[in-house]
Length: 117
Length: 107
Image (cartoon, rainbow over all chains, first blue to last red):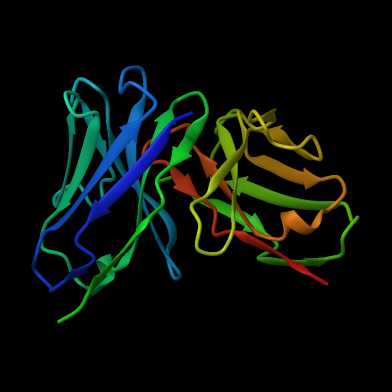
């Protein structure tokens, strides 16, 4: 049974960089996409992007200029960096395991990231 | 981006009721649709994928149907554990997009 555990800074100031990490337990990174999704009360669930075990990435066009998703197969984890955050980036961020066959089948516990001056 | 529209936004029902939630895609997505259940303060949980395939461990009272642009999630007999918010998601095209959610509350 896959278990995703995520962590990262929860309070940021505008213009800072958001950094989150998700470690994958009970599953190899092979054959899956490792995804970041965020949720706000106003915009709902928003797909941010994904990475595979080779480091190949896809990003949401609306966030692509600020987002980097990377993978470290030696530590079985993947990470999200988002630059130049604003209050609009305040959200609960989730990491997830995905495939193109089933969608997101395993999720981390979520991290509330607040951007405030 | 493909827009996903769910209805209703809120649904009031009683234990034992049969409930149906609908999801409409702004363009054809074949059967590449998933349904998730989310309880307060928790991550979403996958219920159904490929429009009608039940994820392992999900009770059989949940079912999904549809293809193209019109989809539905049905709970055959609502149980106390089912009061939650439900989301549809298309994974036909990137970026993957979600419906705005349907909250199923106690009548």
